[in-house]
Image (cartoon, rainbow, N blue to C red; front, side, top):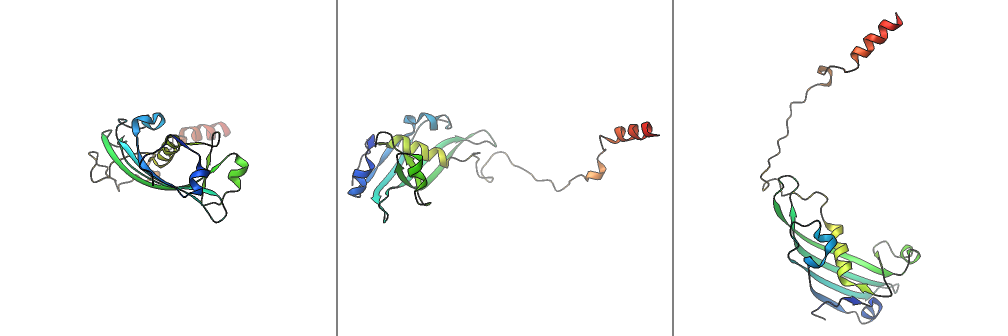
Length: 172
């Protein structure tokens, strides 16, 4: 087991010896993710297990956890979004290889037989970000109220009523 994360790996070599890599990466090193964050501060804890499955596919089983500083879209105040995510990726060289993968694996496109760990983790974090980050309702400073008083549609004036009258006059 390794206690550091290399920049890039050859997944087939690590899978042959069933290597496990653990470590952390800084959020400030992830420019695409940083654009969604309130501040690019903090770290991501990572555990990656490389293996060969029964069908001899190379698989990367990963677990990531992080506390991401986001902006609540309800009250527009900073919030911390704690996430934990697991994934199963299989490195491929082409779309044709990706189509042959079992459905339980997501394809991971390799560049020159290498996988850049930082890029892979940043992509996984982007995939698990909430579309609309919000504090839980009980914690958020903005309280939403749901009104049960709904005006009936028949009570509203029909904007086309005047046109209907005009049309009827023209026909007569």
